[in-house]
Image (cartoon, helix red, strand yellow):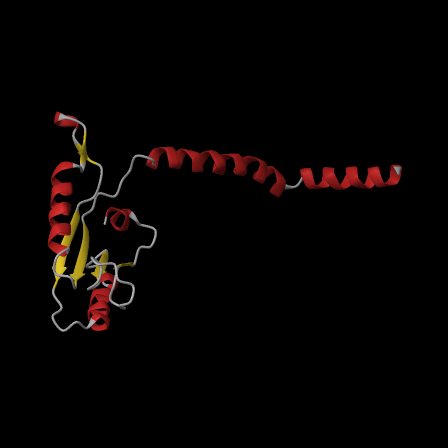
Length: 159
């Protein structure tokens, strides 16, 4: 048993005396503290760039109301603070109503997805014909939200 302890002690001391061990003992706490500092510094930074969203409404009734609600939100609830301390802390949602008279959802979806890919739009929403009646029999029912930024869910939640 003594020989095992002697070998283990020798290996431990050999590992501790290496440059890699000494550097890692210094670098790991610095990296750890740096990552915490970056999180603290960036915690109050918010992307307030305008978010452009296209709406393709096959009901003909929802898009205008959605756009009006977004305009009201943009005027009333984007800022915090009073007077000189007033700052914008949320992005504006700018809705564009897209007309598609031919009822060609696939073609319209492709055109809008190209605009999202080119970063002209953040996302697009397709509101099916039966979205108001909630009929699941039709393939054009419900509300479909598409975006190239799947982690940005504020628009989808707001809609």
